[in-house]
Amino acid sequence: MMTTFNKDYLLKREEDSVQVLSEIKKEFDILNGLIDNYPLKQINKNQYDQTLQPLFRIYIRSAFASIEALCFNLKQISLLAHKRLGKTITKTDMEKFTEKRQNGTPKYLKVEDNIKFTFEKLFDIGGQKFQIDKHEVEKKLKDPIRVRHRITHPKNISDLYISDEDFRLVKESLIWVMIQIKLFTKLSVK
Image 1 (cartoon, rainbow, N blue to C red):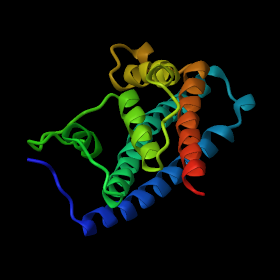
Image 2 (cartoon, one colour; image 1 turned 180 degrees about the vertical axis):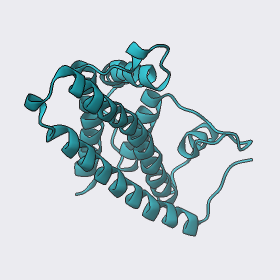
Image 3 (cartoon, rainbow, N blue to C red; image 1 turned 60 degrees about the vertical axis):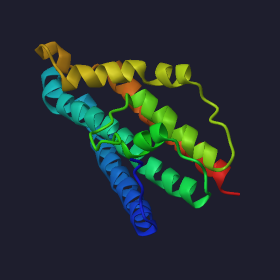
C-alpha cells in the first residue's frame, strides 16, 4: 500500500522543516562560538583534552545529526513540491522520502546515499540535474563518517580522541552540505 499524505499534513511538514533548520543553525552558532573563542594559547595539553575533546565530540555528533535532520526536512519540502507539481513518485522514492518502508518499519539510508537522494530530488523540482556524482559525495564524507562511527561506537579510549584533522574534516563536510543547499537555493530562486 502506497503511503499518502493530505495537503494539511504536507503544509505542516514544510512549516516544521523550516523551524527545524532554524534550530539547527542556532546549535551550530553556539558550538562554533564555544570552540572558535576558546583561549587555546592559555591552556596545556591536559586542559585541552579535558575541555575541548568533549566539545569536539559533541560537535561531530551534532554535525551528523544535523545533516540527517537537514536531509529529512529537505526531503519533506521536496516531497511537498513534487506532489504540488504532479510529479510521479515511485514506491522506492516514497520510502526514501518518508524513511519508512511500506509496512511501516524504518527505512535507514547511509548518510552519503541520503544526501545524494535529497539533492537529486531537490534539483529535480526545478528540472535541474544534481551535478555531484555519488563518488564525490562519498569522497567528501568518507573520512568524516569514519570519525563519526569511531566516536559513536568506541571500542577503546583512543577511539574517542578527535585530532585537529578529524575536526577539520567534519567541519568541512558540514560546510560542503551547506554549500550544496545554498547552490540549490540560488538555482531554484529566479
